[in-house]
Length: 148
Image (cartoon, rainbow, N blue to C red; front, side, top):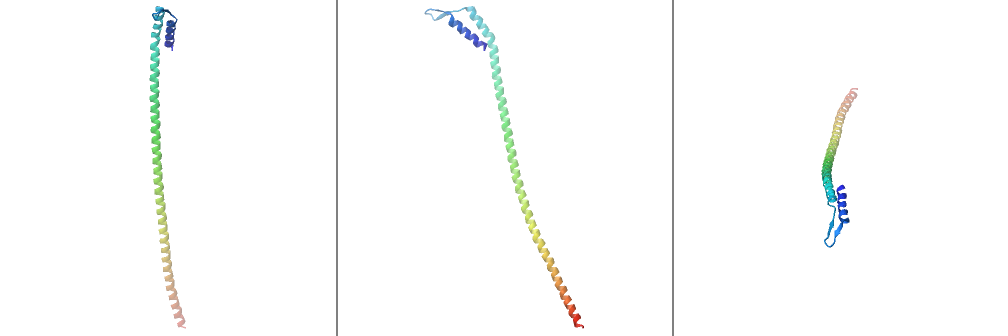
């Protein structure tokens, strides 16, 4: 920074100046010191402005980074909630699928049992009819034999 160089130059001038014995004072070139002070005054506002700009830029970057971090956190939280919701939906769907499968198995078993009972009833009726027909046939044959 130019201001620091100018301050170093002031310090060198003061250190290199003649001192007054027992007074703790030095003799300096007034014009030379005033010229350096003028240069400091000229350069100082630019450097202060630059420092303020750096400070504001730093603050802006920090705010932007915080906003980006907040956005990332919000997106992550939303993604996690969606994943949890999907997981819950999946679990409910699996539970519902199991209920449907169990009900279908139960219905299929009832239908098989019902079909067997119905087939057994039909076969019993056919058997009873066949017995009746056989009995009738036997009677008819006996009548035919009795007529001989």
